[in-house]
Length: 212
Image (cartoon, rainbow, N blue to C red):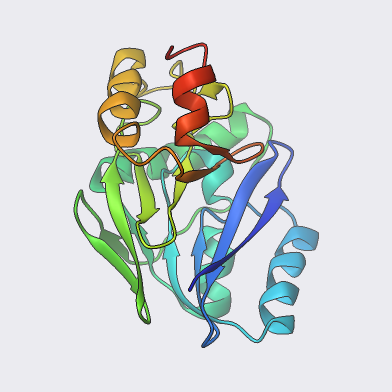
């Protein structure tokens, strides 16, 4: 059984997720901790909860989702897992940070690539990798079928969708990803997005003005 804990980090108010099991093993997804206080908050939670970080994952590599990659790597020795289509986005992130007046030191460690149908395992629990491009070229989501939840990144929000005006974005591709990859999941699936509050697949089918 996975427990989900999240932090809202950085001036961009990004959701960073820590998923952990009964054994104390955990995954860190999209660490957005920008300054030392946020890094300390993430580290303190992991220490206080007696967790052992096992894997560092990115849904995509826009700057607000990768601010903390280097910190996680240097603190716990974890290499980064991402979709190969996000390598170019990761490489551009520091330049994007300068443009947003949010300079930072980028992750420079090993890269491991995930694709549609791959599984991320944590003990007896697993997350399925779903490719959902449109917000960014190699965006992926992590779906836990057993517990009916999705770590969705910036694809689908409560009554909204991810922006597509950044380099590599494609509005129609994003709509297709939502309809063909996410809306085929059960209505009860809870979506934990990269910003804002959680929602469900069923609610967004009925209420999302971009998709109804």
